Image (cartoon, rainbow, N blue to C red; front, side, top):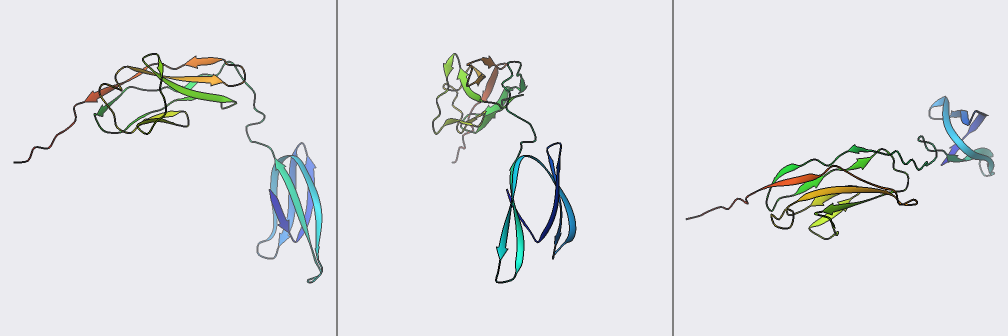
Length: 170
């Protein structure tokens, strides 16, 4: 992140960078950032005899460092849904940790292969055209910590597939 200011006072305490500055547009203001690194670079514009300050920040994540926790759990479990054959279905899945997590889906003990009809969108499964014979059975979401291989399986979810509607014209 780069911040350009006309004039600047700053303090750093307990990992918080507090900037007090003046802008021609908004007057004096104070901004605080949680940072792990920053440097101040003076930039001179001699044509205007104006000195600006450029602060380059390495802003820390609000969540903190990535910690692989084997106690992760499914905070969004897939749920069985009723859907009409030929229509779209969406099965949701998510876990409490996003640190090095990988997801895949299983249907009837076989990995669901991504294609144009069935594919993953993040951790969720999208079925664009539900097919009674191809989508029958129990879907499971599998979450795996990529670096350790620890995997957990969600509860099962099934599609209750209704017959396709046909229009009869005379």
